[in-house]
Image (cartoon, rainbow, N blue to C red):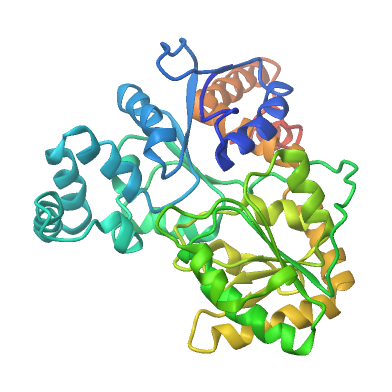
Length: 404
């Protein structure tokens, strides 16, 4: 089998680029040929195309263009794709394409809303309330199959009217490797990694950390990652005057990120509203055996209760975060051990690559191959007087010679 592989790749700073860097070597151990397609280059002839789709039009616009030329299997890293669709329609002067996508989502009302956005009568929906208008249906209309990472996205894909092949495959975890913790301490040291914005509940985290310091004066907060363009993080930090209780790092090379994560006692990855994403940062932290706080939404809700503490998004969110930080610090060893065991069990890279391989084989014609094998076996059985073809078929499946 030959696979044409479409994805952002390093040096682009992208979680999906990191994902592909992790997954590709494992796929190449299992698949005869996997060709990474470069932006602007002609795609090779292949048995199946695999498209990694996220919400950033700069990183994924060219991938959507390629998908429109040739259907294939799409890895839906997020369900809310409004920013991607608007960037590849309105952003390119194709207002009609945006109107069509909005109409597919909401009928005539959607088209009118799109017209309002294009005419500057309404605010930009992909900035103000993208979760209300995911626009994923535009992608689902083009695909031969879909890979998702969570039940949450699977349910939304089916609710959007897609009834084709779908495979739920966990986000892969990074294999164990030695990590030397950074020289950074706190009592406890709380870490928050990734793009810092409103959706990551940073304002709520800052208020909760202030409450925690009233009970744990030695607590320190590490904010690691770039602040979003329209999120005035520095102004918010000035309000609290945390002093040396706050540690700020913006750009994180891979080795430095792992080292800082390893130094933390508790990791925080809050999210609301969710775009349907599965967090690579959470997977990294769990693989390190770290106590984890997440919001009780989307994929994060699917984590076992003994692996991560889940914070409801409600009027008591700040107080709950503060209490959960203290509890997680006290139970860090217990939560960390459960986290590491869970990741090794459910997010093993080899198992994920096996699942990808089966999905791609099926998309490339695996069912037809299985039917042909079973037919030839039935013919041969008849020639030697064996009548129980059903028993033979079960044996072939148990031996892994057919998958259907």
